Amino acid sequence: MLIGGREGPAFEQVGFLSFSPDSRHVAYSAMEKGKWFMTMDGKTGAKYDAVLIPIYSPDSAHLAYGAQKMASGWSLRMAQRAQLMKRLRRRS
Image 1 (spheres, rainbow, N blue to C red):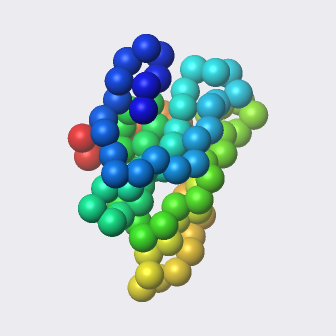
Image 2 (cartoon, rainbow, N blue to C red; image 1 turned 180 degrees about the horizontal axis):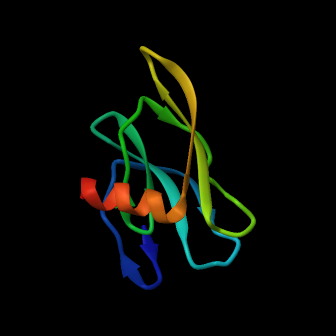
């Protein structure tokens, strides 16, 4: 994935893509070793069996997406962008 003229990490597959309404951020689903996760501004999140389309709030402050773990079913994941970035940074 090439964003802002910079090449990001390589993944086995890239899925759903969403730009924030203020055009400053991008989120997309990606797969590695058979697990899907959400990537936002180049940082990757928790791994799931499946993820759905990322959607930003109108003010670009929140990101929501569906996530599935086979054992527990589907759940909705939503966080303020700043909180999500903190969590993603800890994982990288």
